[in-house]
Amino acid sequence: MHSTPADLIATEIAAVGELTRQAAERYEGIYHSLRQTLTDELAHTSEPADRALAVMTIADAAAAAFAARFPNQPTTDCRPGCDACCHLYVMIPPGVAEAIGAYLVKHLASSALAELKLELERAASAAEAAADPTILRRRCPLLGVDGRCTIYAVRPLTCRAFTSRSAAACHHLAFGPNGAATTISQNPSQFRVYIEATKALEQAALAHGQPTQQVELAKGLLAALG
Image 1 (spheres, rainbow, N blue to C red):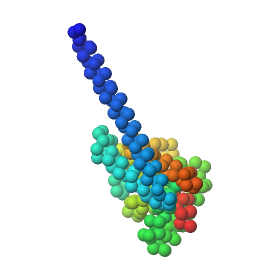
Image 2 (image 1 turned 135 degrees about the vertical axis):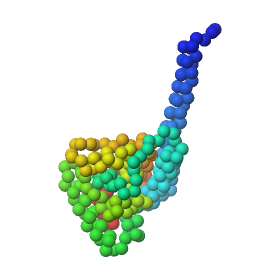
Image 3 (image 1 turned 90 degrees about the horizontal axis):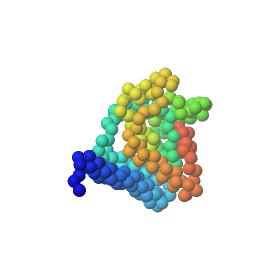
Image 4 (image 1 turned 180 degrees about the horizontal axis):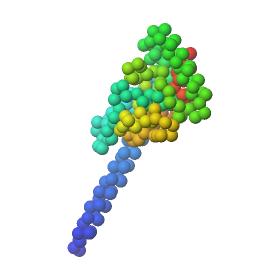
């Protein structure tokens, strides 16, 4: 039977549609593989800090692979010294505070560590006193005078997940009038990688009979630093 032009284009659309469906399934499979990889790795890691470091390494590799190999990744305006996001409220999953705490003890002199603890106490008190800490805007105690993260190698998963196409939008979110802006659109693939990493740490803590809830960054660090 002779195919009409309408038949031909409909057939092509159907073929591409099937390829798209298959690609979507494989895309979901990426995150299934990531979850399994994280679960397998953490099953053999007992210390919370070691689990956090292992998760950071795997998640960073996954995020880098998306950036390097996956098509149509959104461009970001993130750059060293752009620190508006370092004034936002940050929660951390189990193990992250311990990893950061160990890093600080290793890299800071005792006097600097004592000063940092005072800043962490102020930040934790401010979050505790806030009616809604999620809208609190306060300079991170771990932010250097040059606008760079002083613990970048072990920074929280939330910070790793944060991306923005506009530094101006971030500045408006952090420093603009209340209610002026509430969200920044994230790179969806990268954001999901770190969500999976967060869930993996929570599940690993549960498996080891340890607290699973996320805590505010300053509060968690104070506990980790003793």
